[in-house]
Image (cartoon, rainbow, N blue to C red):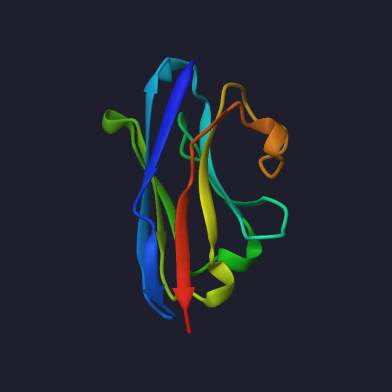
Length: 125
């Protein structure tokens, strides 16, 4: 069993930056990869980025490449999502997720076994 807690969300103006954090606790030895999804009101949850806990392999969705950076701190069992040049369309609840096995498809929600409660990101124009 793994528990995930997100932090760092908030209200920012367009063009601003935020750094989201997600800390894992419990059976963290069973985590293979961690990632971020987001869900805007009335829309489906979508993949943002993920990172392998073992070799650092990173995957981004195309719309955030060049603006966002996912990173990890193994000693702290924490994954970060640095988001720059934020746009109103980035507004969503951002969820941290963890996978207990090597992903075949990094983009699928079903790949991930554990989920945090989410942190709200609101970008105003």
